[in-house]
Image 1 (cartoon, rainbow, N blue to C red):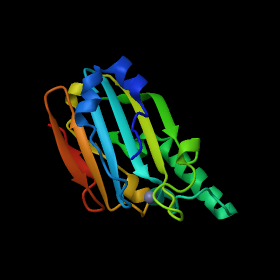
Image 2 (cartoon, protein in one colour):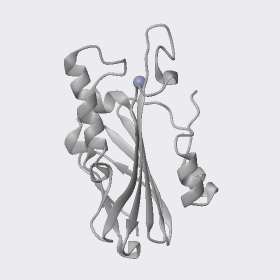
Image 3 (cartoon, rainbow, N blue to C red):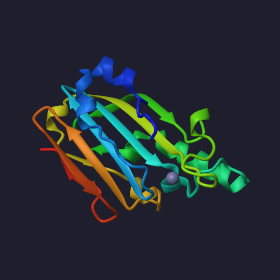
Image 4 (cartoon, protein in one colour):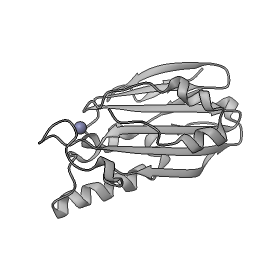
Amino acid sequence: MKSRIFIPFLSIFLFSAPTLAEIRHHDAHTHGAAELNIVIENDTVLIEFESPAVNLIGFEHKPRTDAQHLELQKALALLNDAGVVASFEKGECRVTETLIRGPFDNADQEGPKHGEREEHSEFHATYSLSCQDASVITSVSTRLFDHFTGFEAIRVRWIGNKGQGTALLNNHSTTFSIE
Ligand SMILES: [Zn+2]
């Protein structure tokens, strides 16, 4: 199992440390599935997204062909837009920080993990947003299903100013309520 500590500094300085730990759980690396965590604290929003690389680019080994390099660049460019991952109809939110970790950025993501032939790698992204008024945010949408065909289900965990909840998104259900 790999350790999951890719945004500790963000969660510590923006939010009380237990907040994200509360909603993070030990997820398996399951192709087709991904995790989306959203924490709204006052007028600050933290979005955390992680997914097996195969969902976004169709492979998990290091790019070998020009086409694979292109797929990787396209995916990174799309992830660089927080609105692709999660967008808020109201609240007048703007992105203040974006952290993208591609599947081949770290040495520990290279090479076989679960066997001689199997390779697994993941994308991780976190975004901080500052909103004019986050209290009016009632729903969140994702455009990940529009841009990538590899997602079957995205598990959402959210904590808002007034409550918390979960949602399961798929191709037919890309918006969830956070009221
Ligand atoms: Zn994998």
